[in-house]
Length: 333
Image (cartoon, rainbow, N blue to C red; front, side, top):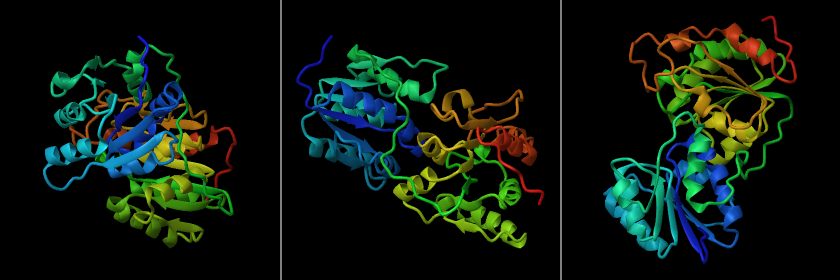
């Protein structure tokens, strides 16, 4: 089936930062298949911010968390006006309702019991696919070649004066994904003679990074900058894009680093590295422990022991650093 006269396409993008970065190959395919069409993005503020700069995106709408959600979605649908295709990367009842409100003749999403009744094209979830591939399956109805593009962000990397290590000790999804601040700090200390260090984190991760900063300062590390809670999404991407090395939990910033192919040590515990590791980054090393209960995919450890992260040692991460393309001489501190 060929789709002609497609003028406007609305895409409801994922809520989370990392998922939105992983949605960029889908947007690139839409721009290639419909080069003359306008794309309208709808989503959370972090999603809209990180997806800035795609050439066919002519309008963006942030879904407000204040007030009545149904009314907010209705207002957005009215502001958008006529659209030809509606694609949602979410599966909730509200997402399905929003697609129905757009009155698009073609409404596509992964089909679940909450949203199925609102869709014209139902996509069956496929297990064991990377999250990038999951989003790409939403375009299969077009019967066009779907290309597995690299991730794409439209911000210019920051130029640091010296080789710089970024540390991201947070993970918004939950504590089960987080390695321990004191261990991040020890890794930073070991590498501080080779790299300047920048700490990253969101507004809810300021205290974690303050602890890491204190640990490093007490041990004489002075080439340190703490940016936790101080960056916009654009600034976060620009700074991460200029790093020489990034050490991180499975998180949104990890996927930003993947988009820029930054050498990355990614520490996984409760989540599935086969589905949410960095897409097409040849410079990533995954550090994880193979235990029976991992990945559990829970926000907090359901068994209350958090062994998937406790078992990861500083030396595991440092060995990972040593296996990257450009071997790094480790400090003896």
